[in-house]
Image 1 (cartoon, protein in one colour):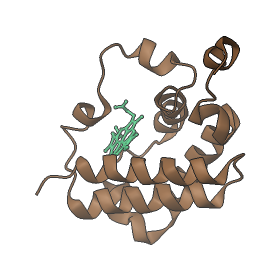
Image 2: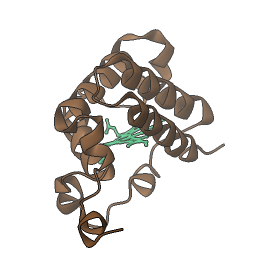
Image 3: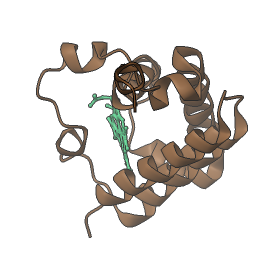
Image 4: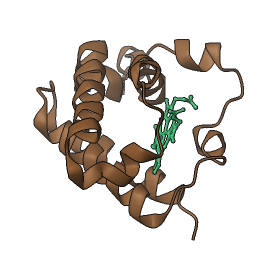
Length: 134
Ligand code: HEM
């Protein structure tokens, strides 16, 4: 391996999936599904009436989480997404609804790289299911 190859910057999942545009599409589809599909009624019910703050925060979180710009992490120093959900009544059923809606959202929208998008859906689903108690 040449020094040049070793120093080549790795492409992050954030870039591969399509950057901020893809994170925005995924987020909007996710909250539209949560808001409109009765299959996610229990999940919708534990959220506040107004989802606009969630729609603003999730793309920024996803960007940093996937190796892109870290604005959300810099604005929320030390905040752990798993612990941040400790106060929410998350059951295996509602966690499953979150995972299902996110998997559908990612499958529904246009992304630059379908394989990395599917890997994101898988890992996010595992995180969501890991938040459940009971
Ligand atoms: C990987 C999984 C998840 C991610 C990335 C995520 C992301 C977020 C974000 C960015 C917020 C905004 C507020 C904050 O920063 O605390 C939030 C709040 C919230 N999340 Fe999640 N979430 C996940 C899983 C879940 C699951 C499984 C549930 C319930 C089953 C859930 C329910 C909620 C609720 C109830 C709030 C507060 C909403 C409100 O105040 O209206 N989240 N989540």
